[in-house]
Length: 284
Image 1 (cartoon, rainbow, N blue to C red):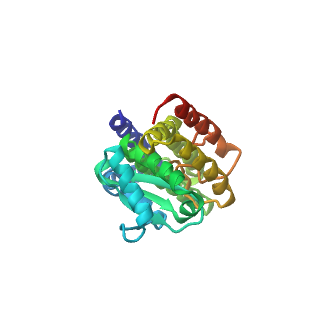
Image 2: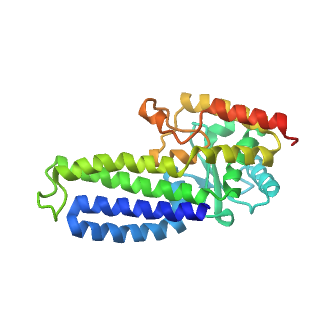
Image 3: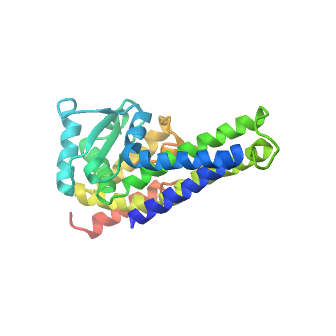
């Protein structure tokens, strides 16, 4: 099922890129955008995880660098029945974590230094079990692809807007650009962000919570971790790219209003309630 979602997402985002190219440069722009999309499809599949990790200056570690964290991930991966992922640390005081990679054989998990200071061992294990749940459920590829494409579309949209503001583009329909291009980009950029929200549904987080509870054997520890992370991420926000916000265990963006309406993450109280139900109804 996830392979179908991935193919659909890549196709739809390719269409969006081509439309943006048409708005920027007419027929020639559409051709260039199509070639760009083809290259992105290739590089996103093979290298999108590296792009996201580099975006947050994540540093790969060995067991000798952090025996507590590395050993915890290795133990949980064994319980989940998946290969040992690469382990990364992000030097940031905001508490958060995410998983990336194209499949369980090529996966990586990353956590901030802030989350390691905030949580105790049981709570941190619950968080990493959640991330390994994403790996086991094979939904990490679509997350990373969506982040890469949405970021590129938003960047091109901003280029179009600045170009129009400073007189870029021409009035000829075949050449694209101009004020029409600016308006089109202003519409397409939010659509690209919303596309990510739709592709990465809230049910994905519930599924990873349930998988994490099973892997760690302690749903209440994950519940406590989520409550701490919600408060901690609000006190110390992460300088996150909006296109990658859905990848983290809790939403790193603290904006309200329209941002909250299209949040990729379910409300923390609802996630905690479901984990508490799992604790009562399942024998871990």
